[in-house]
Image (cartoon, rainbow, N blue to C red; front, side):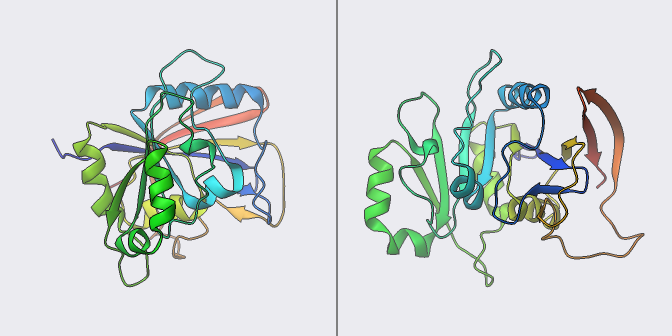
Length: 223
């Protein structure tokens, strides 16, 4: 009815809210049972969405493993075309289709990289960046919806999570919390503008499940 996908943010973090250490390392925060749960979640989504930072730091495949299920469409938000064409997401070894989203400026300035990506079977969609150099998610989501994507799983990183909350285009959060305290590190929503109590993003219909020694917290974002 809206033409937009239903957006779920998948977060894996320590008990003190860190999704990676200060060097960007995040493998493995949660346990194997939680990771299997993530693969089931991924298999149920039409598409998965990550930012360039996650691709550069983790080099993920974003395919379904350890459980039976189809591989989703993979979407990378790489405004400046900074990711390596050799990244696993751009491999043609799997049947998974990959879309890269970048700015018009990056498309003009990185023609050689664009040609390599196109030869690897990557579809590239270019958008106009705003004054801050970012592409508004509100411009991207209708295009994703037009591809038949009704469910979008956002798997990182911190800037991407924060952008979905700032723009008010996320519908649900599935958070895996491991019983670990990291101290200093990268926060899942560190890019959200600070708010005072009473003005925070509120969640509803919360459910909690125990996965080994991890917690899986599932909730919907109040509009």
